[in-house]
Image (cartoon, rainbow, N blue to C red):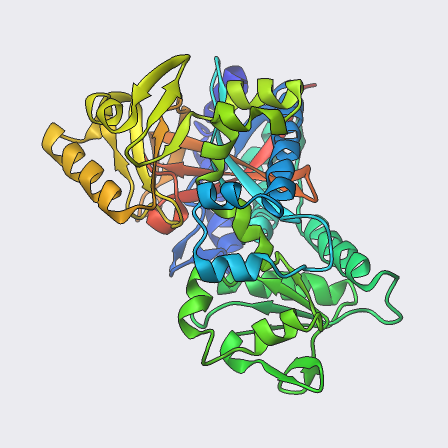
Length: 450
């Protein structure tokens, strides 16, 4: 933690001209870079998030250790249906997971959402299916590094940006090479695939431009536009070698019978898809229940178990059973009902903060109703509360003024083939630091004193 660096940055903003010039450049940069999410400013703050070199080195080790345990869950689940049961995959998801993508990584690109405090580092979720924000973060680095206030700050502190788009391209190319079993003869064609009119389309445009500048022809398209004929997946005559799948399985399933070209090409091994359908195994939030359940401890090394115990919150699938909590055997439903102040209820497979009930913010009757709904649904989790991080940030009001406000700080390291390569931070006035739920994003700089 670097509170003196934050204080110095805020002191610099006391210079009215420096602050005004920085706000002007920030707004111009956001508009030019298309850093818009659902029609609003993606980064309505005048300061990035600072993490010390020492802290980030520790975070990197923790993330990569936990990731090695996650990969073992995938390896075991391929041969153990009881793990698949615990993860909560539906029948159709099991069919998709069974298809070999042609490479070994379960999720070549992933994001671990976490909180860093003075006393703890805790994960809350994993996005292992289609993590957004990589290209957005890169564009934000360019903008924030150009601000007069950041330039003044950089005269006193070493600041290190962590660009991720090249890592993403490398992951696509390495996955494709493993899938082929050799280096391709020509630069592969890349298709970024998602539903039409999604709020992240601006990020797709940033990626397409980056890929094409690197020499890889690219297109943005929807599953409705794809055609699969003669063992070739294409869109408007553009032959596709790599699918950068931003399409979520949950959003593809309702239209999969009407628009099967993507699935048919994947089944026929006519494309390399990243992330593959197999990533659904670890995208389920019940992954944390598998990691923290003592009955699965034999899967992991002592180092992995230590990291899980210290950094992954106790999690269970909500159902009538007896289970272990901190060495004691408890009736799960009774324990959940009586301990709302330390627990969260969340759906096993959703995003954007949908369906979450925060126990310490809920009245007793509302908590009981949420628990009953979770039991009836059959696919909900209960998770222990973790220490959350809060910092004061200079937030921009609608009229462009600076308002210093406390924010929830959700640090999101990005992993590429199991290695941390980049990160960004989501901020929120509320308990849910989620851009889909109205939060904002800032780039994460790694800093040290000069």
